[in-house]
Length: 287
Image 1 (cartoon, rainbow, N blue to C red):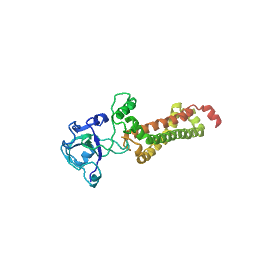
Image 2 (image 1 turned 90 degrees about the vertical axis):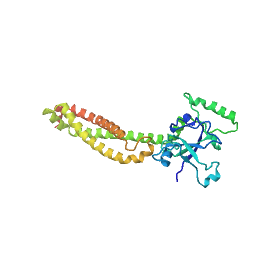
Image 3 (image 1 turned 135 degrees about the vertical axis):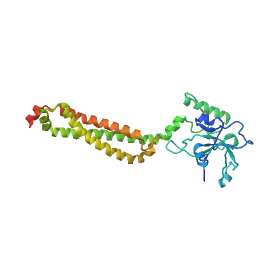
Image 4 (image 1 turned 60 degrees about the horizontal axis):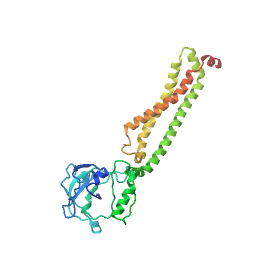
């Protein structure tokens, strides 16, 4: 059974809320009691009810026994517009099918006032509250927030989780860099005599650096390959922290792999530079 959320709106609601009207017309001042009942549906509901069809001019109606306990009638309503989808349940929740009905054609049980301003939006809170109380002195007013504040409140728990995951990720990068540098430094110290002999036989500093960097690059390439495979399968667990980004976003994979490669090369460079500065005479004497 198709279903949709019920919203009521006046003619200026879509412009004030920044919801695009994709097809048809907005509500008009003539859409009142006694005139033909009209609705605007969002794109998701249009795709479900009328796939591959133009929904403008089609008719829809509310059905079910629950109508007996509501002021909503089961009359047929003509679709006059299609609005864009909105994430009312939060940025991480998929959009819901919505049917908008004219505020002037339905009995209002509750409501929300949407105000659009070009600048200094937060400063309008007191003025808007006084204006509402001037019209309806006993009306309670709750949750006066800007759209930015509502968005921040919606993503605050996910943002905290993302910050914690990022902090652990940065700590893992530091540990990995220290580990690579430590392994290569130990390798250089254990091969001091070998490196001294190589340099005494004609190996220059550049060749020694390339040798140590090559060993580090082998470790780095193996780690990146394993990390990419592990990340590909682990991203599903982080899907709830992603907004408008697919779990297997190729751009993210390429950027992170490049960053890890740069960190790994820098970690390899210090031991390689140390190895190239070994004095072959001192190394030969130690032998």
